[in-house]
Length: 204
Image 1 (cartoon, helix red, strand yellow):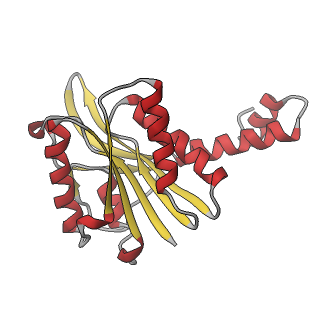
Image 2 (image 1 turned 90 degrees about the vertical axis):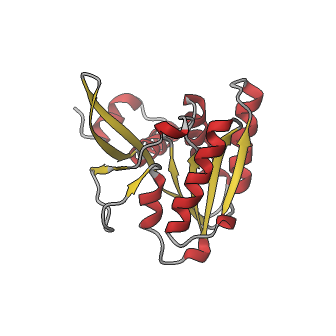
């Protein structure tokens, strides 16, 4: 069983890449607090019992800042006791056209093997990349065999009046599960699918 971790290397300048402690919201990390520049790192730290099963897909937009930030990412990964050869760098051009988006989507699907679990981080990169990762996770569970998505993480910088007040990390896996519920409601052809969904979610 492979354990796949998907992340995007930050587009921030090297000077803007801070090391912070992300506070989990709605869940807990069992390991001690970890100062990091990458929200996927504490998720990795939670899953170190079988290092030989870990593969990291690092999406890197081709520019100088991401090259520097990738080096920092490799350093933090090595501090967990992992070698750089567990990282597969998926380079993408600085373009937002539909061909580039579709190619990234297909590459992600191709890189995930059957019989694996996935944790992904959608914090960094462009907005289209975050959306593509989310779509890829949805498609992967339908196109491959025995693949589970354990988490979709987003790291937030909490600001108030332009002053940083803290750092939080959320697991958005519930949205993927919600999409699966909606697909099942549609397949069952309920008379009033919207109200059926609300009842299932206890929103009435």
